Length: 393
Image 1 (cartoon, rainbow, N blue to C red):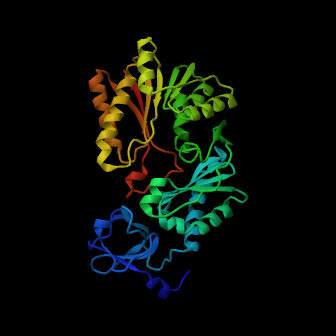
Image 2 (image 1 turned 120 degrees about the vertical axis):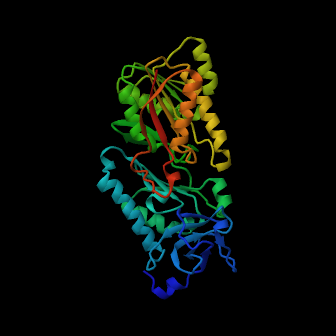
Image 3 (image 1 turned 30 degrees about the vertical axis):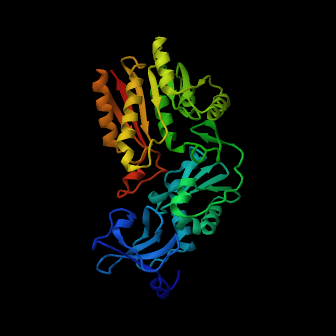
């Protein structure tokens, strides 16, 4: 660790409040702007309005999030050793406590604020580690991050990226290496293709791992409809667990090729169809088709707080439509990965759907992402995934 003198030499950013922020993200309106220009991603000391120590953070005067709080201990230095310790803690949680290696070789290694590493996501797919950067500060520590990861996953291939809108907001440039070839991963005894760099998140939706198995348990003997099916995980799990039949629908032709390969790899029969889900369901209802186990898992609908009501209207439209294809006593798993939509808001949307349809929606259980996606109590956005299991009467 560095000496206290070097710690004291950090630039200071002062809050307008004499209270510590209740969230690790501090917006520009909450701070006094520094008199000297600091490069995006600089490590700074944060003090309150009474000049009392609050913590250490990444600073970015160009970003919506001006400060990303990292540590609240005065003796701590944010350096390569600190990064390595946080990554070691994250890996230990997954391997020693959750024992994920026994269930899968596709799991989240680092979950940003949930692991005390704001602006960093790392996913493991067999021998590939996919690293997604959300903050200029984390990008500055990339060499330390990559070295620490290779300590825990010797011989792994690293693939890193940042989405273009993030690079623009955070003022940093990422040159990603060539995307690796699709790799086979395993989940609860089944085989799937993960395709890092394909444009579908970091390659595979590991956050739904436990929900796929739970849905499959409930869907035994039923006709399954997997809407916004992506790589077909829910449909494949359901058929492997004894569903009567399964159809998957998605608009993306490329991801459906991966879905078909996943079904073939597990020797299950699933019909995958390319279509807009609204058009497909309306046509199926007109044909008199009914499915007694339906999963609706659309992509994130907004990143903008001002668009949350628009997102809820879209969720309403999708869920209302789906009720027309589910017979009484049918199962509905409806999901939202829009972090800005809270669980209460999502359940209220379902209440209005039931009222509009004249149906009763009986909530059986609500779940979220797997335990390898921990969230902090002061970061509700970290609990982004809502998975609501319902019986429709």
